[in-house]
Image 1 (cartoon, rainbow, N blue to C red):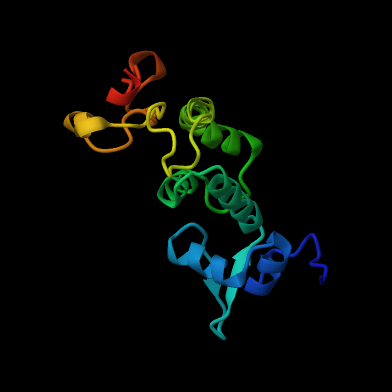
Image 2 (image 1 turned 180 degrees about the vertical axis):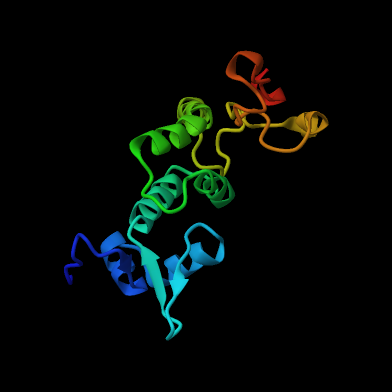
Length: 167
């Protein structure tokens, strides 16, 4: 890995890729989606400001925890141009996602706990399956996985109706 001087103000796409651990094609994709930006040299080469490293790290982390690119883009749009984002900037952005992340954690814990008897939907446990929906009764409530999605069905409000075979 070639060392980029700490005081280098701009990075080439190759330097940014090498330093961030993100493929050049991913950086081009992020740029096409408006998540990062570059300027063009007289020779039409991309140059990224050094603070793009933090933005790319933020994008990668947000993607890893399941934040959609549109939400990431909206968050990055709130950051100041022309300076490296501060700890306070990042704290403000991440605080906005706390509720959504708590929701996802709850949903994953519920999946883990409620699907213990599930064998991966072959389905060899229909009489115990928490997502069984005889005669599509849950279709009247709307689209989606009504019994699994905590945003649609909070744990205290959802009672799993046993299938006829279990009664």
